[in-house]
Image 1 (cartoon, rainbow, N blue to C red):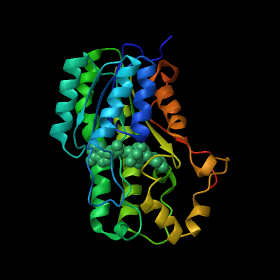
Image 2: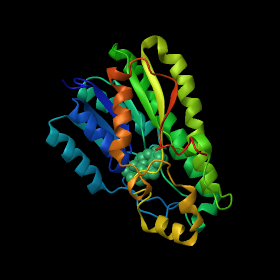
Image 3: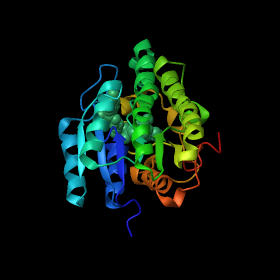
Image 4: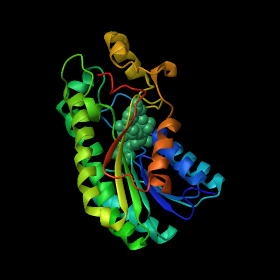
Length: 277
Ligand SMILES: NC(=O)c1ccc[n+]([C@@H]2O[C@H](COP(=O)([O-])OP(=O)(O)OC[C@H]3O[C@@H](n4cnc5c(N)ncnc54)[C@H](O)[C@@H]3O)[C@@H](O)[C@H]2O)c1
């Protein structure tokens, strides 16, 4: 039996990586998908963000599963644009049950991490952007009358702080945003519990996606060989990374009825990383 049949999920940063993985698994389990992605590069980053072709490929793969979509280009920093994605998506797909706040950036490499803009961008995308994704969704989830679930993609950096060779605005901003979403989670979880709407954060250790598998990150690690030891996971993980599907399994558990009494939690999927810090 489909775990989330006849449900509708909103996913930010859906064009590739973790967002696409979550979208495909929820679609396989019966959900229709509303989604968006900036699908353009960001000058604070040394690696490319997703493309319009990536976004179209996500749509193609969801529709190949047989699920319906409303997936468009939008910037998570733009509240009005996100609100419109949600309103148009609910109009087309009929309801909204789940939100996966996933869009993220990593301005944490090489010289770029020392720009103050790297701090500001981290907060705008991964803290304000999470608010922008969740807050306008709430009336639609409530209106559905069947409860619901919100999952925010945090990071082990949101539990134990970043690994630094020296403090930088980009790394501090990333850590601040990922800690900040825990405050969003607790507060919204308290507010929505009576409506059976659950809110949790999933904090993953390194995951094999284009955010970390790129030339700028490789150069950063070549320049700072001591970092490799610092990010080691106690459990053996091929190449020191999880697969997006490992994290998606927990997202699915949290949104489905299997997780119906889990709310207000920071759930780590980290191969023991935070335990041993
Ligand atoms: N990859 C890791 O090691 C790792 C570990 C822990 C947590 N995370 C978190 O997982 C989430 C997904 O990251 P990923 O690893 O899949 O990275 P990714 O770069 O592969 O995917 C992120 C997606 O977000 C989109 N995006 C970026 N800025 C946006 C904006 N302003 N508006 C809308 N979309 C935007 C990108 O285009 C991209 O498609 C992030 O929140 C990240 O912080 C990643």
